Image 1 (cartoon, rainbow, N blue to C red):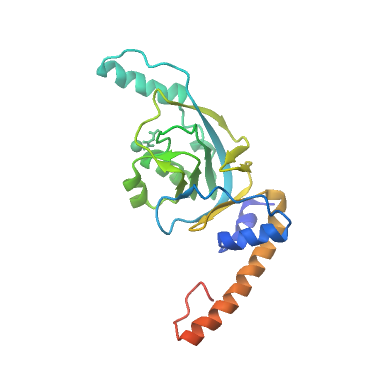
Image 2: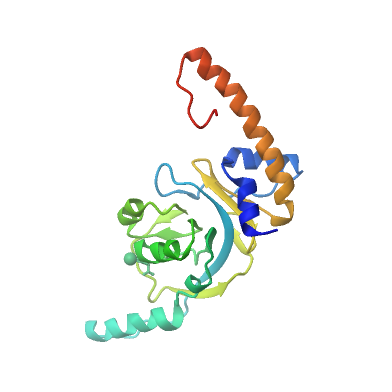
Length: 228
Ligand SMILES: O=C([O-])CC(=O)C(=O)O
Ligand SMILES: [Mg+2]
């Protein structure tokens, strides 16, 4: 199925609906990412197709360097050990899904996240840390992460692999799976179950709208998009 068609199937569905759709498909034990992975800011949400990447802790020691030498050495780390390989591969509607090295390091920041967004990514989820978080919030690229972290990657983290199955908060996410995130957290749908999951998720959403719309009317509340 085309990406655009897949995205249409999930358009407007809440994480709760997708969770229900997964249950309807018999996938009770699958999909829900650990609640430790949370939105960087209130209102962050996305639906997209997983484009995955894995980082790893480095074993390379940092040699004694003068600050001048450090500038050159740090630049080389980006070129040789932490290259931004994912950017040229990103397609519109992708979600960058990162299995972090798991260290207290800001592998993602205001620069690379905005670069991925400019290439077409509509969201980012990482099992690790984010830095420059005030700017990340200001930029409003939806990011879900486990923690905030100050340090840069040099001497700590290396790029490991692109487009491999990754472990995201206890869920196996493969390139091409559907990833949905909102205030309830993150859920991943195996692409082979997408049609069934979306169908029953939609049923849940539509039934929920009918029930809540009746309550809005009883309360005299103006209707909004969540009940229309
Ligand atoms: O440079 C990095 O690896 C992370 C970062 O701070 C950014 O992208 O802004
Ligand atoms: Mg930065």
